[in-house]
Image (cartoon, rainbow, N blue to C red; front, side, top):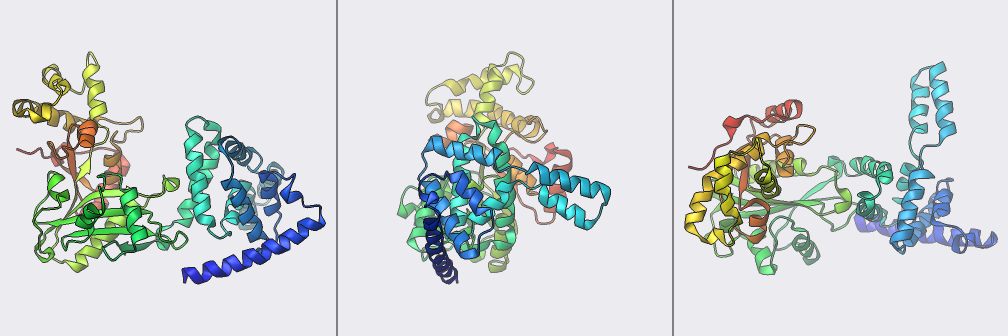
Length: 441
């Protein structure tokens, strides 16, 4: 079906391009000589017929793809200024609504208040491959936002549109297994962001055994491009460490005997869709999917990294009067500066309790200015309605895990009976009850 509509759209675009070229030829061919990309965008917004409009959208995207960094930023500047809200129509709509408030004048006001670039993005989306191109455009905008706050409004409009284009109702859940086409499997290897997939053998160990699952969301407009995927291990207990799960030689469990589903890696694939939430829908739908397949499953839990813990702890250790860690623990934590300490059993034992206490403080008390947990993974799972179940010592002894969190990993529990209550409590109060944190004995 996707191929059929893609071919049909391509045919329309080709015919439109021929018509467009003939029209431009009669006008001295300005589209190929003197018109800027922004002027072509203005032309697209004048309301051409479907065929020529599709062809022009494709031409704009083709030219945009050829831009180097400087001209690309200049185009973003045009989007910010030239394609913002049209002032005069907005003033007229405000006056009309003020004189006679009604659904009709309110709708006119809503239409007039919309930046012109939103309609431009919609029309660019008509081109073959337009959705992928517009997502890529936003990804390139993200590359410059840290230096260009004035382009934030353009980014806000991208996110506004993408939240509609990538609404949950359009997403398709697909299981990824060893029979999945190789081009998609290659992307799973490439996009894995939590625990690097070393090679094809490593990938097969994660998706092929009967006690392993991988699911991804896809969108019909992005053929064979996963949006987000989650890797799941089916076990008989909550895992405290990642090496046994990732081990190629680990003993396999008959999934019919599993009672626990561990979500151990969630990776977003399209950077241009940052800020568009898929994860909460993915986890909840996967829970429903595997529950139907294996009715004995009763525990749904993550094994998650703590990506900001080590840097936070380093800052607290350097503060003269930290309110987060005691002076006694500060002295004990100095052993973290000893090279190779994970290989020293005595240091490992000495560090265990003060690191776990610091980690508990990090999750319970470290907050952003808005009152949310400072840890991004915690914000995600707590916002989804999970609860912080357990903090695990040396759960990830990899070099990445030691650098990010001194090996600390966390279990977030998705209790199906409490998800909505937890979500409301987190959204409303941004508080976390200390009784739900259970440190290993």
